[in-house]
Image (cartoon, rainbow, N blue to C red; front, side, top):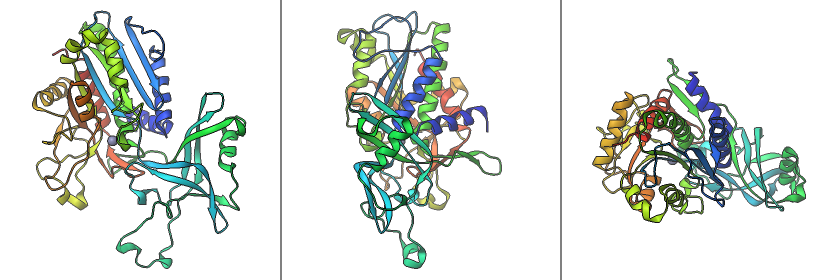
Length: 423
Ligand code: ZN
């Protein structure tokens, strides 16, 4: 693997949940000299790199020496969450001599992709003392077993799964007993089980990322949507921080990775909430200064896009489809499911030209409604011109997705140019 692909694989493996993605992001930012801005503390407007954490959401920015109040920002926005199975508050269930874990579906998961995988379990435990503890059982612990074909000969005519009945992982034999799972997890992280008051836990595939193809030009991994973008954005912020320090450009590069995009962004830490607006207002030097700052600002909304699927080419627009390793795609939709407009597109093309990075354009087929991103939400909330882009992947929302091994590097380079663009 190239250094960058290996680093992305390491990042993905370290980030089975949004909380872990934030922790790994903080580790990398701290190593680069960024300091924490506590959300409830006094605002530090001195030059330098800062980050702010709220649950599964991470913000980071770099204020150059020459940035007075009202300096415009260049925002890189992505999301830290991915579709998965989330453990219910009372997890210990079972049937027929098996111990199982009660789960709900989180986001628009491809349910079938979670079958017969070796699953770990990760998330956070909330203790009675008000603290939270991260936990990651990063080894095969459970599995959602398929029904043998002998017991349903019709299954290949169309698999039907009932989310309540058919998606419960097994994690052993015996009778379930209340408290078993939390006792196990508390033991993993060294806390007393009766200190644990609540939990946010999801399953994850423990198979490591891998290169594919004769030329090893493809990367298979879980959570490429959207950790590939988060990883590129953190790299771009650090590169941009160096650039603006040297060049004297009066822009503030900002990174944000939001939790809860896959379930509509409506939460205290999600993109539909006030968190980014609050931080940008404080960065601008207050409400009076922010109008001018926002008017000169731009946002790059970065989320994976659909690669043209060879077995289903008819689902794509023939002249606006994307292929891996041809660069991140500009995403356009007339109905503003993507926030891109022509001046925003021009800013993206300028960034790609400056970074010498290829790019392509994705538009959904007129008869196939496309997804959306945090882009339109942020544009609506902030009134900041926003551009939607993303690297192409196959199998979006599968437990294991596939992208081009060169596109993450292309994305980081183009995003660095976007984050430092003074125009
Ligand atoms: Zn996404």
